Image (cartoon, rainbow, N blue to C red; front, top):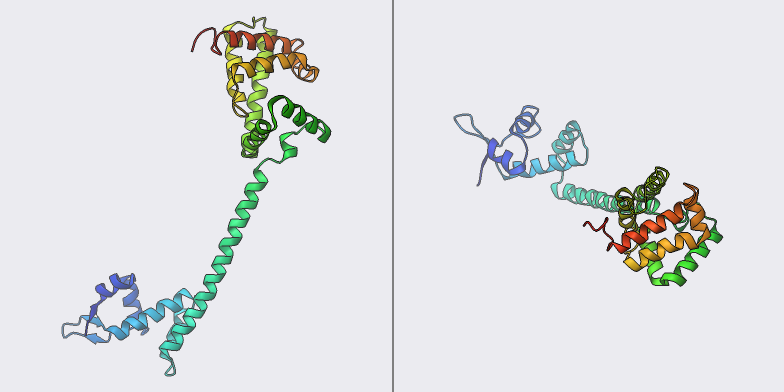
Length: 257
């Protein structure tokens, strides 16, 4: 019959030596054998008993309750194991439900931070938003408009706010440069346009032809003109000129890479 020393049982059951000594001290789990030299040894029956102690502890029984149960002469190991199995099975189902609830909550939170159609067109009335989408679809195609909207919807609110803030900062800087008397071809202005070109990439790929078309639209469409000119009178025209120069230079800053 195989015997286990305190250290060997400790390693086997992943229970500290100190815990086994304590169980021995309070009479909860005493080693079945002791050598002449005083060494304590556990046999297979002790292993079963330790397993029961660990099961009951996992089910949040106190050591006093465990000792009372195990010392009962009517204690039945097989019945106890079946009972443990039923209880752990219940807890397993409960944990599965909790995991499902957590997953659903995370999904809900993710949905809440993702942008809605209304948030994407914040500042526009529903009629204006519908009109802009229709115009964009006619100009660029429904597929491209949908792809752009999907790209935006994948952003969190924080990302969307950051992208919007970047765009507003570029327009503000461009207005400051115009007010300072900078020419549309100057390096600071062209650097600003390069930043704008990169910024547009958050929404859709921007070819030279498309960028030129956007510049012309800022002037031709009075809504865009009004949007830019509220920052500085004539900014829409100024920005269009700067964009055309940027495109003439191969979408580089004054010929630089």
